[in-house]
Image (spheres, one colour):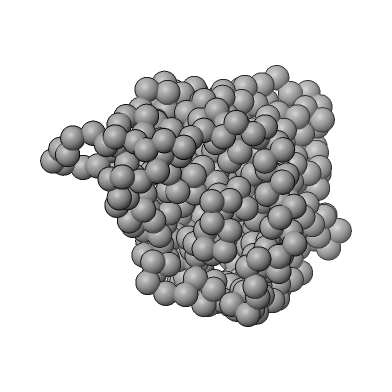
Length: 421
């Protein structure tokens, strides 16, 4: 360990804000790219005759890899730097999305959207946000975590309505190529502007002591470190409470609403672009809700925030089946606003708890907790698809997710009574 020599003080914004801005753009893109399959379910079914369950399996693989890649991506960022990992991730997304236009069989959908896009988006998901915040910020950590997390909602806001229109107009292939082009266009932006550590440019993290000890890149094998951290965390009760709650979070957001809201609304006569627009509205309110959650995480006990968020989400999902209609009724708009405020508001307090309990391993631990989020999302995605195939409706999926959210509320409140180590 060596002590860094900070750069001379300059007026203006700290460089940390510029790094956060670049991270925001990358996270924005990752969320939009990952959410695209929800728009493609109906077009793929119509063209190839693949069942909802088959297409949902590709989404499930995508979701699992999106999550399970995260802890290894966090360790890789420690070893090789954020810039390299994110640039390679964007190239994987471009390849996976672009190759889908050549598909002739369902296994190719599993490979391209499931594996390649899943690995790419997982490498620049919320664990990337946690890493940026841990390295570049001491002050405003909760707020910046909320802003970066909101990048996911913004990506959904920007991409979903556009891609839905492209899929219904020029076709789903044009939509896939648009995603590939957007991912490629982001690579030089990340390579030129993202920096791995404050010490790389002779400064310190925002709010850090000027004489802070420099953090050196890890020389430990990334996979070994990720697994070692998991082994330590798995021996503590808070890890399982956080992971279990976050698995339910994934099931009730990305897995269910993010994947199946559009086809569920279509079942009730609503046009796909209209349903995609409603998801985009969720994104608008999620931005406000997540930033507010980040600010509150700096001020309040994070476990209490999680308990409130999960409880309110569970109640709202139990009401949703009665709100679907061919047109956008006021009651559905109320749900969209309410649910949007809660969509990923769970992330800032979860990151704060991982940091508080596990210290320097917090980002990698959050990677594993986020992995459980995506496993839950994958189970919900395939489960809801099979429910629709066999029962002809999604109602049971909505009620089940609501009940699980109430369970997650209780698990979150119990974290305060468990020992961290």
